[in-house]
Image 1 (spheres, rainbow, N blue to C red):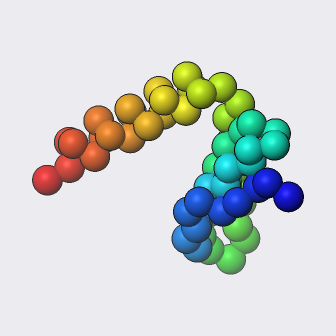
Image 2 (tube, rainbow, N blue to C red; image 1 turned 90 degrees about the vertical axis):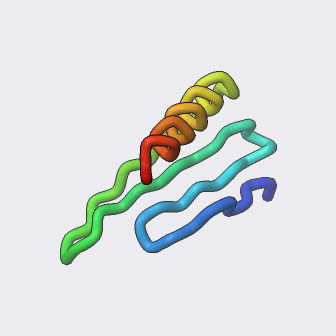
Image 3 (cartoon, helix red, strand yellow; image 1 turned 180 degrees about the vertical axis):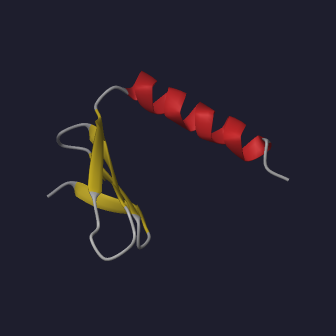
Length: 62
């Protein structure tokens, strides 16, 4: 199994699968009735755009 957990918290899981060549980001809401959203990224360019957007957001924080 080539999937490995890269980052994990109570509400965010990020895993990378080298065999399937994808990154999976799973988000869950908190509370009594949790809701889940999964984002599967199969293209390196899309992942690069997401990383750049997160870095830009990080730069705007004090």
